[in-house]
Length: 305
Image (spheres, rainbow, N blue to C red):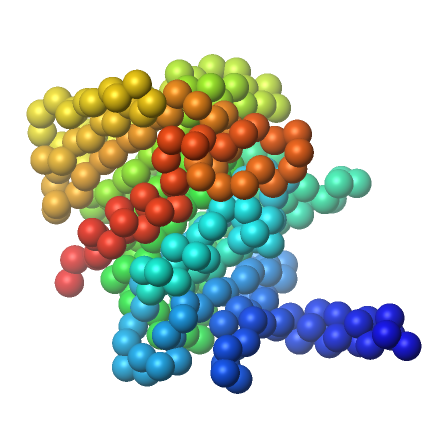
């Protein structure tokens, strides 16, 4: 009898695509979908505490993109973004990448020259993100001048692509354990960037070259230098090495944008300060907390009026 009860609840949630955390009768977590390119694309929305009490407030939002083989639920549970969003008063949305037609159904993003099924089938993930932003603004009280993107690995590559192609909508990005893999990038404005990486990352090496899946990845320094040019930053980078983290920053850029990079000496291909999503995954850095740092970074920027 108890098993039937749980099954009924499960199918009710799946049928509605809407299950939630509750607090005093309010829903704070939603599972939803929308049609993009003929596919039903799924995503999770997490509202911060105080969302319903502050009825006249517009909330900033972070779009959080999982890595290859991950999922919206995996990213939600592994990296501590919800906790930071609650502290800072942000909405977080976790979209799912398109699932491959292989036996494992691995999810990926089409970040340009990576990765796997999404790239090989030319999935229009930029159009999906554009449509998703419209839907979120319709359904929730979102401040359309404070929309931010982060991503792990392939998700971070997608964040870079969105900065290139959706710059009128994206206020800032914060890729983690990632690089840029789009051949064309013509943003219409300077984009603030926080890049977080580990020197021990062998899957997407900071210095570039062959990594996971046999892909040849761009070096992070070369990517940051591209954005220094696109953001029209003046002067050399400020650099500090405290023996745990190498921090670089370019602050004299168009429109008040900055570029910041944190390279840790510990960790690996992982989300600093987060949890290992699987026992075989690389350990996360203990020197920095990526979620905490990126929310502090995002709070500094909004789209121009």
